[in-house]
Length: 412
Figure (cartoon, rainbow, N blue to C red):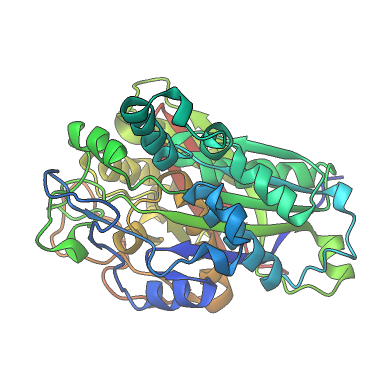
């Protein structure tokens, strides 16, 4: 018999706020976290805007000396994990640490560290490269450092599936608990890639918005005037537990994870498959896994990147899966406010789904001003919507053709 898996703690570090309370209140208020890039001089770049995390001080969460030996994406992960454990009221001295694990996702890892150390190599020679370079840069170090910090000795892995990383990580953690390999998992995604090199790459692809003079209106999913995504940074972390473990310690339960689906487009390194067929298959598998009927789904947190093909094909995928019910669903993209957190996107978006269930409130898609005939669903335009949400799904679609979907429902 499969274990039921519930969410008992959550935390976010995001462009719209640090901590669950600020994150959620700003999302439902429709506040944008996007502005001019301050982490480096972007004046020569076609795109000069991003969703940066403001006022983050790693020393509030991590020893000062240790923090200097970590890339920003790892700092985000540790800080958010500590906040999530606190939110879950999880007493680490009373749980079996051998049955507590960590699965995190990151699409890029320590890009900032890689770039700075490469410059050190070229400018000063190999003898000046930091001995901490490799353990600061590698993608798995966020999960490694979180497990060290919390003392979690159970399953520990890292998922790297581009912009689907956070969703795949949570799905994998869900399955670990469901099959009985752990009682507690810290899971989610983290990313900190607002750097000259990453920006150069995405600018060369012409993937990012160039609406530099009006940054808060730049991310506009499903709007006909969308011109590319806006890069964000941050982390979303969730505490998952077996229902039995949560009930035995009297934990608050935000929602229950019931389904997970993931597929491959097998089509192109960056472009989604025509018609969104891979995304549709991912949603179908998540619903099937959770035993959910189409009519039960109230809300979809879309991948909704504000790029031409993604928004068009994801809309087509939703119609393909849900048929007539697609027009009764509420669909929104919180990337309109946070920007695209790459490997951390799916994690903060699942947090948004759980909070929508908890609060009976659906966050909006801001900057939805001009209808696109190819995007004609209910996108919760510009203002949050009060609605009882019993079942929500979250989509993440990544370069390489990775598609991942999670289904969550109100705990009963």
